[in-house]
Image 1 (cartoon, rainbow, N blue to C red):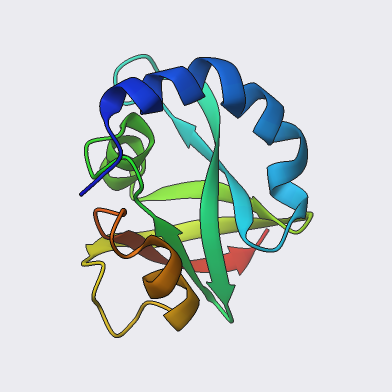
Image 2 (cartoon, rainbow, N blue to C red):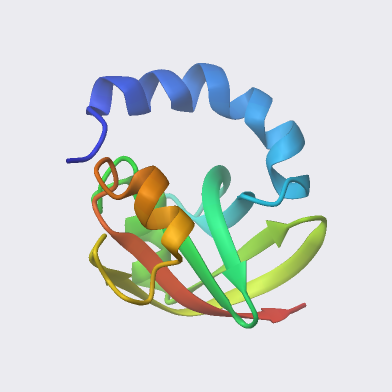
Length: 125
């Protein structure tokens, strides 16, 4: 069950601006750079992410209808900053929270909370 939208709205306005400072540098976090579907405006969203080789798994703590998820799915790509390195995210797809593609740590920490995960390929650049 995803976290309620009220919490997501609070985080968007209050905690995300603070998390943007450190999320692109820590191992289990990343900063997603995406463009609004309607506005065309550039956004950056801190997320919980697992990077394994050329794959990124981003937990959907607020559900699949979050704006950043819909923006990335509509565009088919996004930018990612993880541990100080820029990547291009391509081929996003949603996988269930019990998928064998999820790292064990993600299942243990976020399985009951997350509404699945965004699974994609990343390349440096």
